Amino acid sequence: MKKFRSFAVIALIVMLALFVSAHAFAESQPPMPPEGGAPGFTSVVESEEVKEAKGPMGYMWAALAVCVAMILPGVGSALGVGMAGRAAAGVAAEDPEKSGSCLVFELLPATQGLYGFVIAMFIAVFSGILSGDVINLSTELGRSFFYASLPIGVVGLISAYFQSRVCCAGIGIVAKQGNGGMGITFAIMVELYAILALIISILMVVGIKVQ
View 1: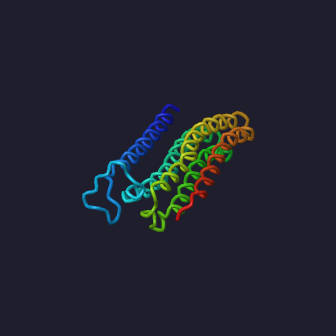
View 2: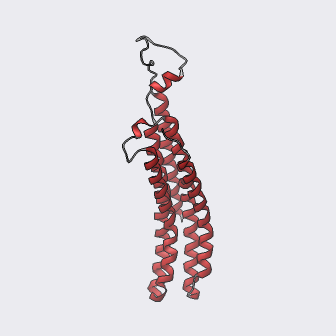
View 3: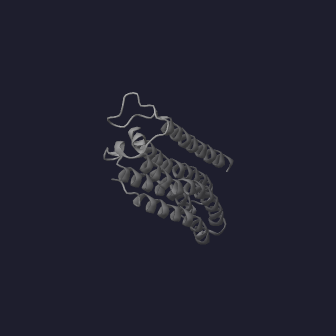
């Protein structure tokens, strides 16, 4: 459990560092005069045309959104499946006939990683990463994709952790009673919040209107 929390904290810190770096890089781009402007342009207050002349940074935000949607839930699911797998292996070693019931508990924490993959693909398609048009994505739209990746990214990571703990307890039920039906119900209750985060992220991505 301590290792899981450590990896989760590290993943969140890395994502936060990427966000801060991306924001700082976007803001540090030097202003350029609008097309046809004077070579000596040194205006302190940037007009809308000057801001657009900086060049779109949406591709960077969109790529960061794909990373958040894929990495955070993926890390949570990988570690959760590993934790449940270790518990299931111990039960299966004592009674091989219970391995099938234990396998269900091991697979449940993997769903958050699948949800993150779905959102990552949605962002890649809608932002133009797969088609190669992402270079023309505006900074505002790129940030919108990044914000859309946060619900499934953060909730997926946290829910995978807590669901893995419930699954380990469910495997304990299988070891003692041979049937983990109620344990599966308990684990699915945690799954509900990952599903809600998935729906919100999908709605946010679909709602972004890319020209």
